[in-house]
Length: 273
Image (cartoon, rainbow, N blue to C red; front, side, top):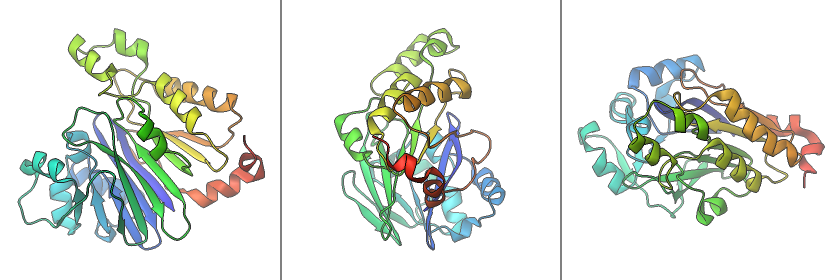
């Protein structure tokens, strides 16, 4: 399994997952032109994509979905409620496949298991993505609001985890947003803080977890070194020595090969806990 966070933050989110000849884009929160620029950066043709999976209707996850899917003839996988909420982005001639939260589905060599999150969207989900043959498991979880028991269960035993660390609580409190927006972000239907993300990732830690990517950082109310430090401390205290990175808003993070991470981690990481 190969993974590339093409960009993540308050202004746009998109993650590419590749297993064999199957390439799935999770969310299309950038314009079609910007998505094409990001694919060019990593040397992948957008027309080689097998599918686009949309997790919820907010613009930072859907901005380019219609134009990009039409231009490159990519089927869109979404829930019926999210499709209705995104109607203005579509013309009606796109190939659309419906899925339901809690009902896994297969795309080529990939199995996707969508699960509900607590977020103020119409029908918000996060996803785990499986290599059907190797069993490798990726979790992509942003816009969580709060980490429910169902979220914890869905994200358990991931080999690689893309997890939101949206804001620093002090920066949010003192930041530029109106009080109503601050309340929304900090609420149980908003976003995870660095502290909450650190607590969750420590709970999810297990011997086969070889990589953690922090995502959906707020440009106004977070700072990459702050987010990284919070999660790095929690992981180091638990003995984790694997890969830790912060996804950027403006550029792709780079393509990550999960098995290569495992080889680099070696037996020391596998003996964790």
